[in-house]
Length: 579
Ligand SMILES: Cc1ncc(C[n+]2csc(CCOP(=O)(O)OP(=O)(O)O)c2C)c(N)n1
Ligand SMILES: [Mg+2]
View 1: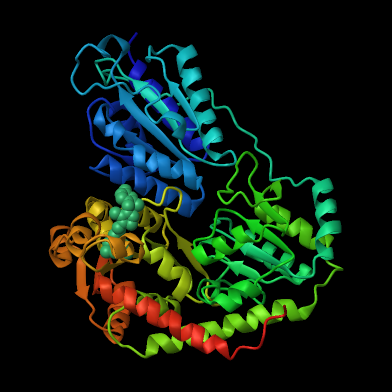
View 2 (view 1 turned 180 degrees about the vertical axis):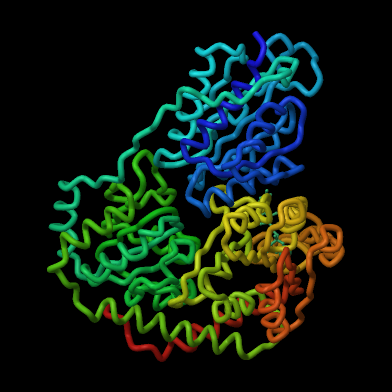
């Protein structure tokens, strides 16, 4: 039957669009032609062109996370599809809805040595929430209806809590494009009705009765991507009288919500032994993923007698510390808002909350003071400058390794509406450039800060800037290798030359030349004023602007330790903790 491929592709694309997919990343290839053309010809779907599938996957992920909506990716058969695996893994773990559409050969060409043909069935294994090997198109009404149903279902599954990636494998028989096929539009588009998050009233009543009994509580907010969450958790903190230890990626540190309970310098003050020991809450309420700060989660792990509530989406279990004594499976924002309303009459003793807020203030002053003592380029100073200078409505995207940790330590809260993002599902150093450019494609002003190896790993992603006209600022913290390893015990036991070879891995790459290859802007900033100047210019310059800050790995370790020593000394004079 003729017209099958084109009509089926058009039904698929139209149903995806009507189900909420407004963006697609398309990678070149022949086998995927019907789908690529159906997307590109659809007037109401934004198309983003990528050559490298690995970058395309991460771009889709960054875009979908920023939009909080599903994004599709289309690629050809073979290793093209295999290159999407890292992004699928990250999307699964960081709960981002992406719809992966891989073209494939028809069944008679599988496993018989046909070119560009690999086994694509369940290619992403359990990392995909749903997989369907679609039937070959035959132009029949029955198969077109089935295709539409699968497209609607794919979006529904990707969105369903916890969100994640789905995979449709699309075999296409030649001729790929049936001659003369006209766009008829689908006659059948199922609509999925998904309800708003609902929190069980019984659970709220039980928590509302129990929690006010604990005077010294603490709320810990890990990575979260729900705009409704900060205000809800602020209301809960106020109602209970608890401080909120907020990871930057929780979106609670910065914004126009009530931040009067927010503590953001805990990563530094919990490294002080006396303070650490004094941190003995009666109860912990933990929301979302595990916070970045190792001193915080290590301390939570030692609080074995303390009830710890973990509030996370139904069907998930993010408790690697195995400290949760009660797991509440609920939408975080809805739970916090409902509980805040239910305990609104209660009030904790002000001294407990106040003393952590005061310690927080003193720690931030000590950190600022320590940074001011040395003007030489330092990763922490970059984040402190960003905390001062980033305009409202900016998304700060950070790479894994040291950047996400330095963000945690050195980026204090503010009233500015800032969003924070990182690929913290699998913590890869791959795909960071593409994910950040994907976030920029959502229309946000994006500043990305990442290490030199992470930059190298996804420098292919920079092409998206030229192909798709994206504006973004990229700050490369260039310490010529993996700086994080110098903080690990390996650094003390492995001989220096072997350490450099295996862990340091200096590449000697010239960031300026990479920038030139991709025709991006480039500035090297050698001190804080030069950085601030470069940043302010980059923020108003169209296209991609790269700012390189060169630092030294061993020196970086010394600076971190000196700053920590300064904080500890400054806190010695802090008033005694309540216990
Ligand atoms: C895809 C991937 N490969 C390897 C690692 C292990 N890894 C973690 S941090 C790191 C070094 C990163 O170096 P860079 O981006 O320069 O940041 P720095 O450590 O210097 O801050 C490596 C190789 C990883 N997380 N992801
Ligand atoms: Mg590095």
